[in-house]
Length: 162
Image (cartoon, rainbow, N blue to C red; front, top):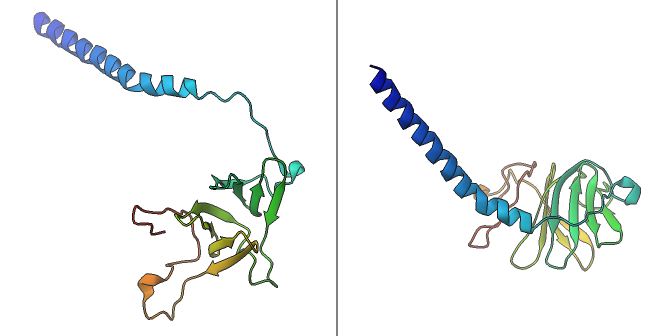
C-alpha cells in the first residue's frame, strides 16, 4: 500500500512540475513582450484639464490620431493639447443623442461611430455634427433597425458591417 501511495505522490508531483513548466513556458513570452512595452511616462487628465467627466466608459484613437474619450457626461476629443467636448443639446438635432457615451468605433471608411445610452451616432468631422440612429418600430425591415437604444459595444466585422 505504501509503495502505491509513493508512486501516486511521485506521479502527482510530476504532473505539478509539468504544469508549472508549461505555464511558465506559456506565460514567459507574454511577460517578455509586456516588458518591452513598458510605459515611460503618462499624463493624468481630469476635468481640471477640460475632460467633461472623470467617469470614463471608453477610449479610442482614430486614424487621424485624435483620442476620443466617452464619459458619463459627453464625448471628448483630445488632440494632445486640449479637449473639445461634445454634449447632447435637446434643441439641436445634430448634437450627440445622449451624454452617456459607452462605445466608440471607426469603420473602414474612417467614419466615427459612437454608442450611447440613447442610440447610435455617426460623427461628421467636417461639420462636427452627429447623425443619430434609433430603433424604428414601424420599419418594414426590422432586421435593418437597431434592436434598442442602449448601445454598449461597437464592432466592425471582416465584411465591414458594424
